[in-house]
Length: 330
Image (cartoon, rainbow, N blue to C red; front, side, top):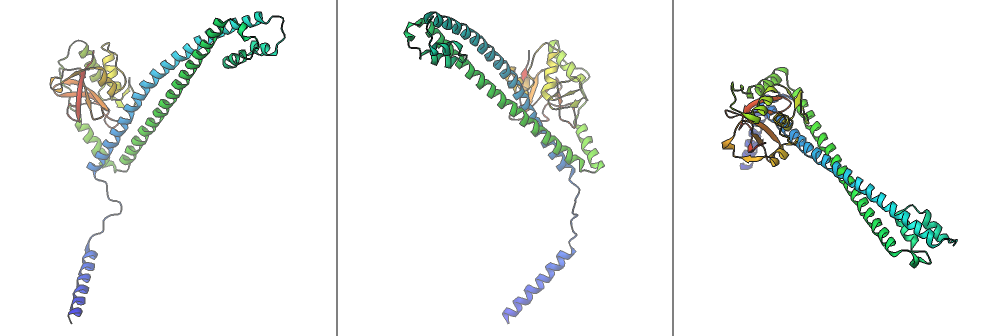
């Protein structure tokens, strides 16, 4: 009897559960995305793209340096090749003089040999090698080794340059992937929701101060940066119509006669460090760890910076992003 009562209770509970489920309204198959969630995801994708862009900028700087080094070692190799060729001609002349009148096939092979190593090896086959000028032969041996070292250095430099070029291509692909993903995410929103996000981004922009207390070279940098407000954000750009973060700061300080690299981390490494509590207009402020964003302090707790593709160049609060340090160029 007890078992029968238990089965009845279980059956009754199951019926209640089925009934409850039947009255739960079904969720729509394609629910509208939450605007706050989409905004956070778009911001994250833009930031990841900017991180890749700044790594791309770093690699581009490295590539330029490697290309200069490669050009230098190639020029060194060419000078060494010319010097060794001159010594080889002297050795050939010595061989001809030493074996003049003798018809030795080994002598003939040495005289016409063009490869430095082969030339050196064939010289050792001469039956009367001891009759050659020892000093001249030693000089040639040294030049062959020096040329080989330079050729190895050139090959190593070229290989390193190829690696950086591959890194550049990889970072560019990452930028494109993140931006495409963000734009696809935005395109799935209804027009009203998308306008709400754009409006929210625009609301982050603060009004520029009427007067910026800057002077000298810093004033020139600040004035240039402020004049770019409203222009578009393009990864890797440095004006005149579009900028990325480090492209804007580089061009702003160029107006003041100060040369900066096109990289936020490189700019941080090259400036004089200043406390964020002692910022002055014109100082560069850096964000995220590792550093992947930079803006120009303009006073009154504000910066002007190239933010992202949604907002372009704008003015915002100095602590609107994770602040990690500041430098004073010049």
